Image 1 (cartoon, chains in turn yellow, red):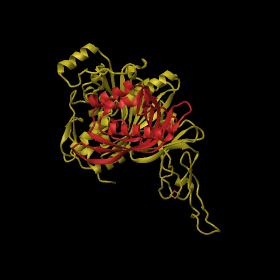
Image 2 (cartoon, chains in turn yellow, green):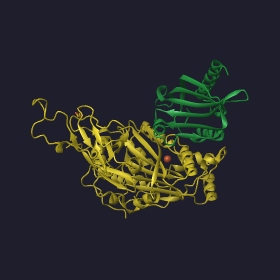
Image 3 (cartoon, protein in one colour):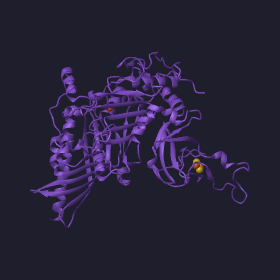
Length: 418
Length: 161
Ligand code: FES
Ligand SMILES: [Fe+2]
């Protein structure tokens, strides 16, 4: 077994985070084993992305390339995209439709479940060469992952012991997913962003309501009342998943509070030349950013619905893939609304293009200070649900669970906050 | 209109467009368009799959102006400069007088933050699909679709392509 990464993990319930976790290649390696191949469920696809038998999508669990497929009988499967012969990438396209996957190197062929179904020259030519008599194709399929779906979201796991997906999500997270995935969806498009920062800086960002009105100034600049000042943060029993829900409280009081604080966030000097950008339909109250450890974010911001997949790409980079969707029963006008509001989020998002940049600013600044640590005490030092948005409770929950899963701490994983 | 004169006019417009963005005169950028108009930055993968979501989607000059105000006043990003390289232009005049232009673009981005000051990389490659019209003797963009091959955006996209 690989030696455990060495780190002085503070006993602070996630309120102090040594910067080493964003810098150390040994920790990164250990994450790939203990998190992405450990007892977790990684989001890999939406069922709506591959609805027909034979449809497939190439993606990743952590940094491991995998393929998600739909078999002839409609069941969903996932396998590592590494040939059982001598290791070549079997599936070389990002998506497509086929019931047989043939490795180009020596044409070993697999079915949609990853079973080996064809080996050229298996018995040799003219009685010469070929595999030994005891060669058993059943022993040489692609490495399969466990797959489970919830509300049309597809998750995969390397772990034989991880709890069933529904339990992993827990009742609170399931309820918030049910709110958005309440009827059949339709995929509307993708945007991708390559960010030069450790993936966990983004895991913090999406659990952080504190920065919302301070880093993101679009609403304040145009004198639009942020709809983000009432709300709260809800966690699962282990604190690893979170939901940020915010809704408009009292616009007048909010503005006054900003003026009083003299924040740069309040400067309504401009008005939108074309307010049609924000002219949506009342669909959901407020805004929701939900995170499922380790790799999924579900967002509902006005009428933009998207899932974001977080893919680590080395210790100092991650890719973020947004999959935008609407509902199958959306009318033309609703589609136009969703397309226009997509301006708000993603790599060019008017209200959120700053997020990746903020994580890069951290990565750049901490480079020579692995032993220094960040301060995560907004809203106290505990991990718990909080009904306000000036809190870092979700970030502490992430780190408490991370520390335990990585073996940095002896806090038991079942140490519930209720 | 004479084919070569038209081509010259379109080349001139594209050069002016590139100079406007590359010299950070963003406030003039909306004036290249008609009102209403269409400016969209569309990932190649979405176009290929017939999916509508764009990185940027503006259907009025007002929306372009709002992008510029957000760029100047609201959005937070590292300082940078662009150089547009536009080539392989093809111009076509339809019987109804509308002009379509297709060109390859590359944008080199030079970072001007303190950590990576002065480093340049290929930031974006793709294609322009433009529809142009004459308005009071001036060529204007009625539509500009930027099809981005480089759909994995490096860091972020805030300055228009
Ligand atoms: S490596 Fe795939 S068939 Fe040989
Ligand atoms: Fe943010």
